Image (cartoon, rainbow, N blue to C red; front, side, top):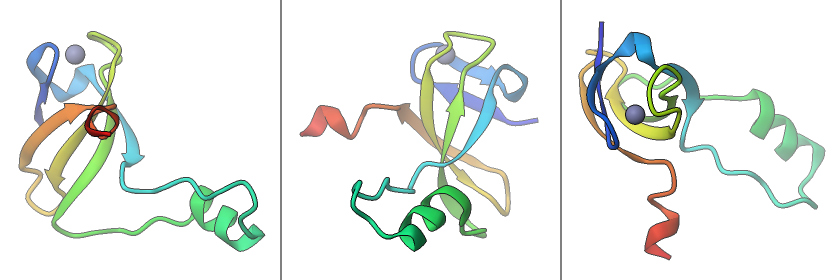
Length: 89
Ligand SMILES: [Zn+2]
């Protein structure tokens, strides 16, 4: 079991969270081609190593967070709030 550091609640068991996918995928502009939209919705990389993922603290504070995790070793390298990118704009 993973121990995930929620930025709001501290270290919590993985069972309190729901995995929600790749946090590096960027939404294309509205005028993007059908292929770009298809890739956005359906195509994902399957990385081995460090990766940034969306997790939802569904049985805790119910906030979305980004977790940096090694997909090979399952080591959790850190986390941040979901809107951390926006706070730097
Ligand atoms: Zn939390």
